[in-house]
Amino acid sequence: MADVTNEQVVRFANEHGRGTADAICQLYYRLDRVNDLWTQQGIGTLISGNDDADTIIDGAAEDGRPLLTVGKLETLMAQVQALLTTLDNEAEAPAVNPCLQVAVNPGG
Image (cartoon, rainbow, N blue to C red; front, side):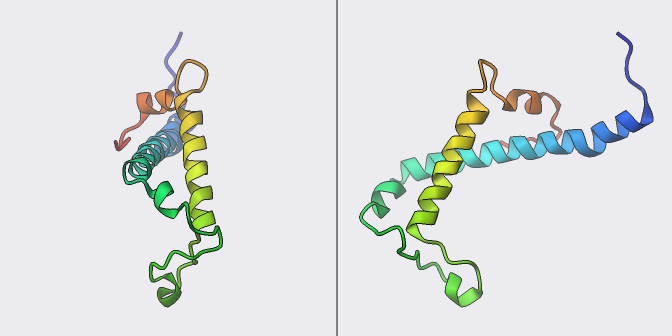
């Protein structure tokens, strides 16, 4: 096979392809760290006695950030775990592998 030298393809690969690979890798590593912290610190257990509508008092009301409730945090963590499952278990080759192969700044 011949190497690809088409300027439009090269520009797209460098400006969009590699940056997207970086973003996916960085997201993967961040999700993995957050999930580990959630588990190691037992946050799910700590909030299990609260109602889903209970607000986590973190200063958001004073500084204008959206309020975070127990239910929203639990939903967020369920999404974190679902994304990790998708990225880790895509068939037999984790979906993050192609990203790691071309990422310039994958994080980790």
